[in-house]
Image (cartoon, rainbow, N blue to C red; front, side):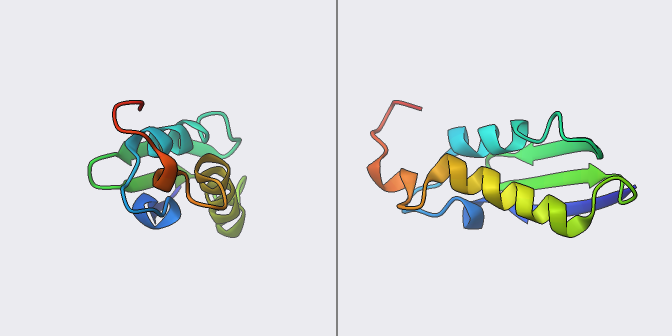
Length: 87
């Protein structure tokens, strides 16, 4: 069992951190083989993943989290266009 932390505020750039997007990134790992547990601190902007390194390599996990964040935020930065109160 290995633990890896990710800075969601870095992965989801923009003038404002979007907790809705961060939550969807965290939930995107729920059914990934090898992921044993996720802890998502939306206020602090941290995702901590406990995983089995025999089933999931660290680099593969990093790529997956980065891809989930990019899909969620979009390449132009979702938070720039977010309207207040719609999350």
